[in-house]
Length: 273
Image 1 (cartoon, rainbow, N blue to C red):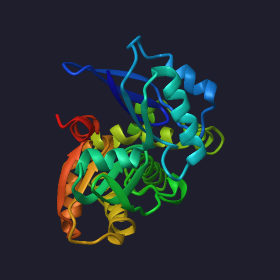
Image 2 (tube, helix red, strand yellow):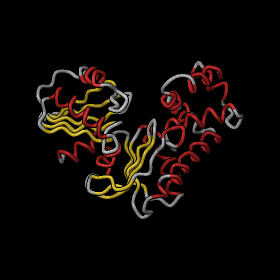
Image 3 (tube, rainbow, N blue to C red):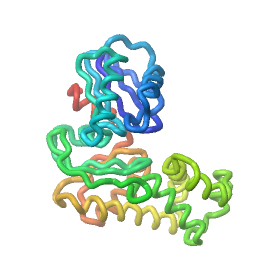
């Protein structure tokens, strides 16, 4: 048994590969920085019995070279759970890079609840423009789309106030409370992305989305070599693929693969299938 995992803070997708079949299982997400060893063990306990594993490749938030202590904690927990001799815990960005480019060269982007990007080659990250999170950055992400939607609605630039409040059962006061006084405001704002997608025929919404993607390109992609192809992974990238390609092409970028999940690419990277 070989295992590949792609994890965010809210959910984790596990690919259990026995050489013949690949089974996909989902558990709660694991963030190696935010979660304690006990919380990590609780998440791993949600997996069905799968026996000992030969190798485990875990890609997730809070792992990688930037977080050596958290990565070591994650490796210990995975080793205890699976009994594998070979265990790797790397960043979700490296997972995206390997899924999109394999051992080739290009620009890999994540556009989901948050956003990130890197220049990669031969399965490694060579350069990364820091995303800075949804308050200071995360341009092009679901959280920023949601933030810009709410801003536009309540400041009168997007004429969908009643539709928006009715669709989500919210009030102005509750939105302010959820954003400024409760945790996970980024996830709350990103939950509005489906509403944005459903109203792309509204000129003001479409212009807002285009501007958000253009901002992602200007503040992030412009820092990488312009001749390299850009590829993207994530729910936002996949849902808004047509408009994303249009905006990036207008900015002079060559756009390659866009996918919702890194699963297929990671299986190919690690097992050549």
